[in-house]
Length: 568
Ligand SMILES: Nc1ncnc2c1ncn2[C@@H]1O[C@H](COP(=O)(O)OP(=O)(O)OP(=O)(O)O)[C@@H](O)[C@H]1O
Image (cartoon, rainbow, N blue to C red; front, side, top):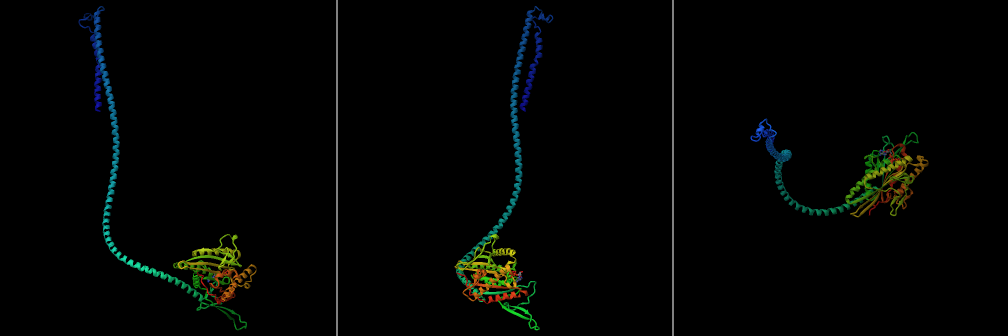
């Protein structure tokens, strides 16, 4: 600005000079006027006469012209000088202008630099503001951290106190440990001694187990290798039966009584009584659990390597299926599910003594002397035929039959459900077929005690026999007659087999019926047999009940040869 002002001032002076330079033009006129005035001495006389020289005054005119020329020349010279001055002042003005332009550019650059600086400054300001707010936040944080630090320091002090006390405890414990270590050494020595004792005890335990098996078997033998239990079902609709009398004190006796009209006339009715005695008689109120308790010892025998056969005999509707299979609830479940439960429980317990068991289940129905696989799950049209075969080592097998490996009780229960399904399917087709067929559930048991190098093998057979009613009474005809004949034939053959075994006959007619042939390994010298005779309490079942009880008595009188375990 200062420079601009300076430049402005000098510029005005130059202008004034120029004006001054232009101003002499007036003066020049004056000068010209004065120069045109006749100079004294030169034609002055002529000029003085009327302002104009007379034409003749050539000299004067020349001098006038010379004077004019001189004045012009001086004026030209002055103009030249002015011009020169103006030129130089224009040049200086231009120079000045250029300088000022440059100065202006410099100023502009500076202004831009200032503006940039200003922007930077505002950014710095913002950053500063941010830093200030951050600093405030950090200060707040610092205060919190300081407070925490104080807390931690307090805690640290507490921990130090604790550490000191724990170090003290540690020292005490180390001392105790030293004492304990020495007692551990002593204990280890006595442990080794105990281990040896345990080995000895295990030997004794195994010997004890073997002795238990022997004693158990002896007891079973003393009880008889064939035992007969009688079970009277409750009357349909409740109440008590008149013709079946149970003793309140003797649970082995049963009396069947019938009133007969006296043929003599006035003497009144006479009562005919039939006394029976079995290994056990269960009345209508006996629970499933009560019944099972009596046969649970036989289940143990099966795990000990003895073949066990349990079958239910009696007329249709006398309670055979209820006894063998029972209902779905825990209270009503019958012999088969309870046996399976006990077998798996007992096998589990024996694992502690080194025993390992494997089980194979099969379920077969014998109807009209032909076999049907109750565990078959394939297409009905592809149902295979079955034959009973006896292997060289006297094992009985059935061709094409499902032999299912089982490891849990649930698996067996599932198989029983499949069997029931199979039976109910057949029943729809042939109308109440289950009463006229025998169903045989078999569980093959194989046990091994690797440590003792002992193995055992046995079969547990649970049979629900067909209704035992007689052909004549049922007055059956056609297909029904054929069925009844087959049933009576197989049941009477069962009686014959048992009698032959009891009499130790050389020939046992196993092959006379499919039932006895299938049960061959479970009946006889190497087995323990239990028969349920189921009795219906209704008066119109008297005849059938008498028949069943007579058959059962015959079986009860048999003593089958001493059983021996299938042990190696
Ligand atoms: N001890 C009992 N307690 C209660 N109900 C029983 C008892 N025994 C049998 N029943 C019932 O009596 C009916 C006939 O019994 P069940 O079906 O067991 O006879 P069954 O001899 O097997 O006949 P079938 O030869 O036709 O198979 C069934 O409804 C059954 O529930």
